Image (cartoon, rainbow over all chains, first blue to last red; front, top):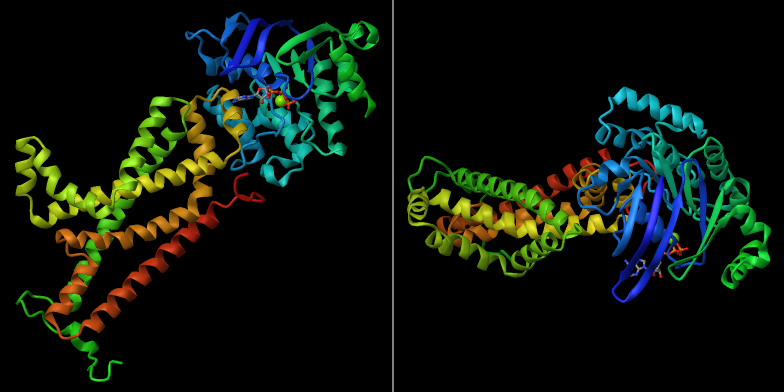
Amino acid sequence: MIEINNVSKQYGTFHVLTDCSTKVAKGEVVVVCGPSGSGKSTLIKTINGLEPINKGDIRVNGTSVCSPKTNLSQLRSKVGMVFQNFELFPHLSIIENLTIAQIKVLGRKRNEAGDKGRKYLDRVGLKDQAAKYPAQLSGGQQQRAAIARALCMDPICMLFDEPTSALDPEMVNEVLDVMVQLAREGTTMMCVTHEMGFARKVADRVIFMDAGRIIEDTSKAEFFGNIEGRTDRAKQFLSRILQH
Amino acid sequence: MFKNYSWDWGVFLQPVSTGEPTNYLGWLLAGLYNTVVLALSASLIAFAVGVVMGVLRTTPNRWLAALGTTYVGIFRNIPVIVQLFAWYFVLPELLPDNVGTWFKQLPASTQMMTSAVLCLGLYMGARVCELIRSGIETLPKGQRSAALALGLTLPQAYRYVLLPVAFRVAIPPLTSEMINVFKNSAVASTIGLLELSAQAQQLVDYTAHPYESFAVATAVYILINVIVVLIMRQVEVSVRLPGYIGGK
Ligand SMILES: Nc1ncnc2c1ncn2[C@@H]1O[C@H](COP(=O)(O)OP(=O)(O)OP(=O)(O)O)[C@@H](O)[C@H]1O
Ligand SMILES: [Mg+2]
């Protein structure tokens, strides 16, 4: 589904990503973790071409993201993305947030898009909030709406960039619950997150990044089950994160 | 003050001494008409050009951004009166002969109005450009990413996501620019366009009542300000977003 082959990226002389390679198969849930500044956000944004790369190749469902011949907006419409700061559009009501791309990108009729939007709002538990504006919802509600917005496009895979780290602690679980449900339904997912509970519950694999490199790419069982077998950096990171 | 001055507000109703079939109030109204036509036409140009250039300055394309930067650099930094002289006296000479001749055959007032509209429009456009640019730049960077990630093209992202919010952010400063256009329109009197301030000046020359004349002209400018502010406030209220306070 997603293939990342020897991807490197630099800003001037600073290497954000160095020779990163991994794959996400259909239906797989991959969690990406690592210290701040290690390049997690950059890596996940290269997958739908939001961040251009200097070297290597990325394929989504066989289509190269880096080829100038690729219709990027069409590719992006099939890859759902959820951001740390929700990024709902403040001038549109929740339901309009969910329908705008369906109408403008996929060419769906307004009522067809509306039906789909309401269906997904219901699934994330926001049926009654359709007419509200983003600023009138709590952070957790906004993030659930943002997930619903991505799902409305019938994505072939979902990318999450720290979807819960801007949330107050009491709202983290309502968002994670939605993500767990998606994972259990067989959605292909790549999630940057430090929620190790989530990783334990639904991840198939865990990727650990440090200083722009993928230094661990292992099964969940290996990652959490065999702490001794981890690299020093990963051990340090895990001990810090699991203390909380 | 004003001890020996005999006030006479009836002066406006006296027929003008040039023999034209109008009174002095008629002159002021003709001036007001020119001021309004000039300011509104210039505002339209300023808005259209300002939005396009403001958007260009925020695009990822270096050349397009440079085009916007150059435009602002030229039009915002040269004094507006110099620009006006360039438009009115220099440009017609630079045009191809047939166009230049055609332009110079137009009625003098049309020539002046055209030059003044273009001049003010592009000058104010450079200022509007900066307001739109900073309106776009105050939005969280993730808004653009989120729009693109949904599959919207860059123009669609501007049209449906970035600009609607940037406009809302820019309404208060755009209001002052709108007032500025009316104020700056007085500069057109320097090339002879008989707008409001020029007509007030004429009244001073033709009647012995300078204070009445400038009092009325001042009152009209203030009235215009009030109307602009009221209209823009109405606009602001009608597009206000529930629970949303400005950008980030
Ligand atoms: N536009 C840019 N120009 C220069 N450096 C950048 C730019 N964007 C990101 N970086 C740098 O690239 C590195 C990786 O950034 P990235 O956001 O991918 O890290 P991250 O792993 O997501 O960190 P965090 O956990 O803080 O979100 C950081 O050191 C950052 O400072
Ligand atoms: Mg990040």
